[in-house]
Image (cartoon, rainbow, N blue to C red; front, side, top):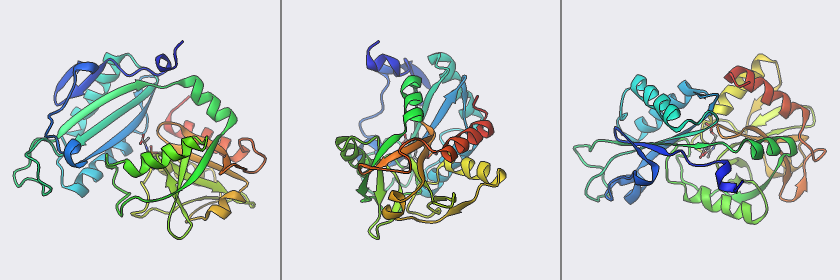
Length: 293
Ligand code: PDD
């Protein structure tokens, strides 16, 4: 099977009220996301035909929009129906659902128009490459540290992803699956598209505390709840690259991969060089809580 066929893009896209063949779907050339990066997005995992952690993803979507003063393109109940319709029309049981909301199309001006245009809503899907994901879980992944050159509102899930993509491109060139972004003081903020975690010698799980410096990951939130319920020792604080290199275990979390063990950082082996027991346990606890079997 050709590589692209293992995670094909869904055939149907949703744009502003219409379900269209993916290749024919498009937005206005004056859309503010295209012209100015003026938009936000969400990604939810879909398993067994159901969106995972749907409410917290929609909560965060509403928050991102509120922070930018963009209206919700439709009510939450209607949006949930459209998401289900997309899953059904694309016949994708296990995949990823992407929601993008932009401020809409208007004559180009940095300042948002006084009379707001109708926000653009784009929904697309793609199948998940389950074999590749299983392999990453089994073997663990490598990360490469890269300078965090992003802006001061990384808590908003904006479509302005240039710093993330440059970091991830550099990581790929270094044969790593993910970039770990490092702030000016030498602390890890998060991954290019994931949250970053380590486990110290005493078995305490550490992840950066929430602030404008990181995205409040939905998977991070549910993982933390699961760990607290299981009485796993966990601290939300920033950690340095040196601490990460000395960690017993490390992992990344996101809607796209739940928890993936990190076994190499900048070419250096972490712990035993194989996925750690605690990372695996946390992953199982999360799966149970999120309703993933
Ligand atoms: N990324 N940090 C960043 C910068 C992210 O882009 C993401 C998600 C996360 C994890 O958040 P969550 O657990 O809610 O997925 C953290 C998505 C998956 C993406 O850009 O494709």
